[in-house]
Image (cartoon, rainbow, N blue to C red; front, side, top):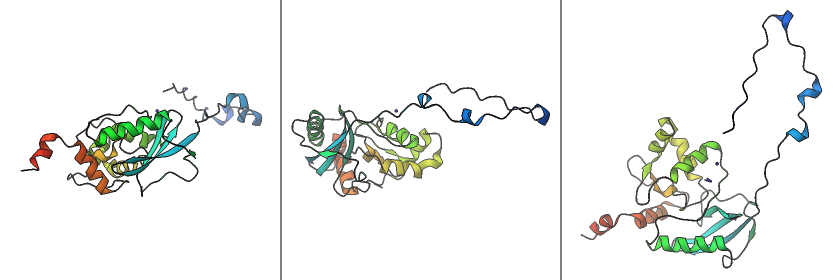
Length: 214
């Protein structure tokens, strides 16, 4: 994602096993770090949200500063937690929401294959790795949960991959709809399988869609 290595200090040597050479006890006050040594977590920009009307229904868009933090379908399986979407605003006059709305319209019309809208996510380390891999799936193609698991180095992680894919907070722009079952079946989409099928249909290569006419 945003969806985001420091060199770790070397581990101190273990104390001698000879009790007579044991290290002296550490003074209690030394166990408490000074407040100056504790780095505070940077504050996140305030959030705001709006509703974007699209061919697949009204989507709730959530922004965090200058990045899109959420895009949810009506009846989304994993909606944002209460109190995490900020205040409601109009999309008109909001550059980020206007750009998102316009690019989605172009996408649904088959005129856009990539998005320029920046996104930000705050998942755990595993989820972030999965969401990063979703961003590498080209338009008009699909992959499987098992394939992503193998790219992560462990084919046994397919189910966990599926959970991370299902909890992707930025639908469409982070293209979780491009992940299908091992047999090509449409499985697990937080926005609903009918919408998943529609998204894949939009991205379907022209020669494939034209062949359906004959």
